Image 1 (cartoon, rainbow over the protein chains, first blue to last red):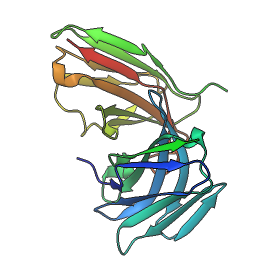
Image 2 (spheres, rainbow over the protein chains, first blue to last red; image 1 turned 60 degrees about the horizontal axis):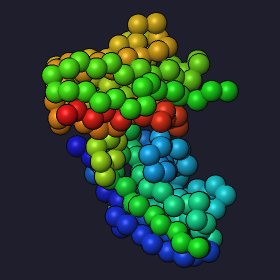
Image 3 (cartoon, helix red, strand yellow; image 1 turned 45 degrees about the vertical axis):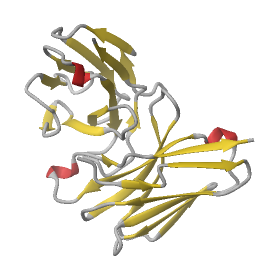
Amino acid sequence: SQQGEEDPQALSIQEGENATMNCSYKTSINNLQWYRQNSGRGLVHLILIRSNEREKHSGRLRVTLDTSKKSSSLLITASRAADTASYFCATDARGRQAGTALIFGKGTTLSVSS
Amino acid sequence: GAGVSQSPRYKVAKRGQDVALRCDPISGHVSLFWYQQALGQGPEFLTYFQNEAQLDKSGLPSDRFFAERPEGSVSTLKIQRTQQEDSAVYLCASSFARGAFNEQFFGPGTRLTVL
């Protein structure tokens, strides 16, 4: 079963615009991670935010975490065509034996056109 | 340095055949994970190794699925008597630290098609 649900499922924007993706999850977590997957390729880690953090930045990426609402958002500023990919949030659900798995959502497919 | 590698990249099997998928993690990484990704879905956890110990295999969908990491490095995921519903991309990931608390490095995956 999947823990996270990303919203929207698909997003189409123009180069230079900002893209915002949201993720909701169900159980308590230690951290939440965002990954990117280009078509036909493996996942690449983007950013990790711990449960005691509220906001984190990395380059053009900004992630927020609201543990009271069990939700997170990923903002990509000044998007580029190369940002076209699927984006997944993933959590390590507390209570799972030794934090042994990442639980992924279904992903948001982002298309950036030039 | 080299990332996580997986082989084969593509595998076509007839229903009922056994398959073996290989994962070479990043050297020195303690944790190794297998995930299954169906088309249009996010990856779903299959199993987790810490060095050679398989600490969690709760995600394996049936007893036809078996994974091993005998020397704490290379891992093999074996699927016996493959079924059409096994068609998916199988992703391997490794991590320097124990558990799922840190960044995982993913391989390119093996796309399995069962006819």
